[in-house]
Image 1 (cartoon, rainbow, N blue to C red):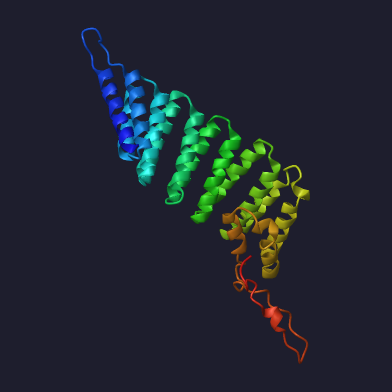
Image 2: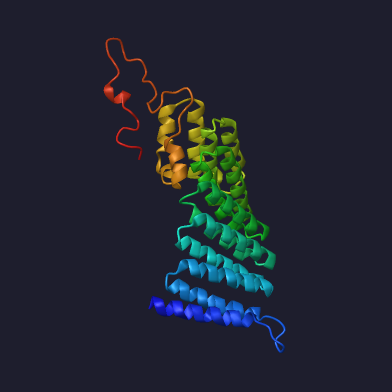
Length: 309
């Protein structure tokens, strides 16, 4: 079966080469037909799992489409060549070609397809290179924002924000979250704005910037429904406890289902939040016991005993 497909691919390559030849009666190469034959060759190689040869065929297809000034099809071919690199576990090369395809989609006026390609590239590279994934998601978000497709832009910024948190690039995460929240506000998705406010508070408190965290909550009072929401009550309680260095209350809020079941990166911020000046991981010191007595052992328990969740 594989040998048959390989032979089939070589037949299509021969036809493509014939299409490029000129003569007394044929003055110009037929790039359109050559690209079509090379695409068939690429598929045949791919089916035979000859990914290196399939990649080369897709690159030739892209070249012929570019000569023919059909940029959309050229971009598609570059994207397919990138996927062949992916099959060969050569991710940086795959991403490079998909980015090239996205630029061609933009030049062709099909920005939405460019955004989808960049998002796909981000997903491919995320398991091995978070920094590059952030860059790709941000580029994709910008593409959709320029197209006024704010829902898609906000979702991609959300991916970027979470990865920035994972990378501990918290200053950038704070900026990204604010932009993300503004987009959800513009499309009137207020419940998601509430969740972004919680994420903002956690990020700012990890930055040890209480003023910025408090400001995020105050600004959210203008969102319809926020002031009577569970999210608002939780954040007001958290900020008050943090300000008073009440470790017990901070821990209680941060281990509540509302925060513990957020996206994993934010949930980790919640359960790892420390109060400056407090004793890490311990409950607040118990009041002095009556004369002759002593604090019971239960009052000195480790708050994280038995696991974080």
